[in-house]
Image 1 (cartoon, helix red, strand yellow):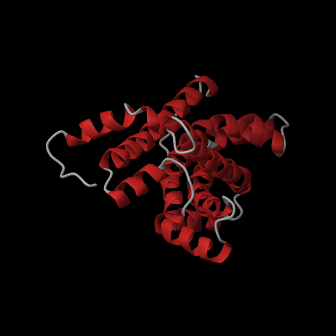
Image 2: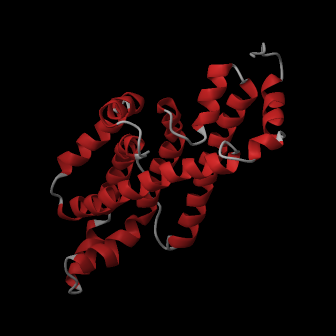
Length: 233
């Protein structure tokens, strides 16, 4: 049964949701839904990385295929994730998680690809020339010189993609799949507002946790001597 929102209702609903022991056990409990959400997001990000990181590094290093990067950046702004998800489900059904992975991977590839490309391409040409002058060639220059310098921008692309995927994975619930989005979709459908608010806060908290994780990763993996350049968001 629905309730009319009043002042401070959101906080009360959140407390009600989090304080209910029934919401922390079983197949519909927070731990189970969180694992489902992480499965969608984690697999999507890993698949996107496997495609976009090598491709972005290669294009940035060779200068070939730069048009693909431009098209990818534009596609990221125009991609109708929910519409694509519904279309794939209509074509494939919901027997597996593949229908939700495809639009999430498509969403994650552009920021990873663009930032990997820009990170490598933006390395000081004098540094590149010096590496070649020392006798380094091909992959040695790319992985020994260019990638370490470009790492802050590469990590920025991964962080952007990860946050977008975590937030967008809620759409899986629209087609009957799991994840934290179930709380939001089911809560709104039944006017169970504590459930909807709790789900939304959990998704937001997970996105913040991912951002914090990448901040730590950047701090421990990037050389202090590497200049941090403005990135593409």
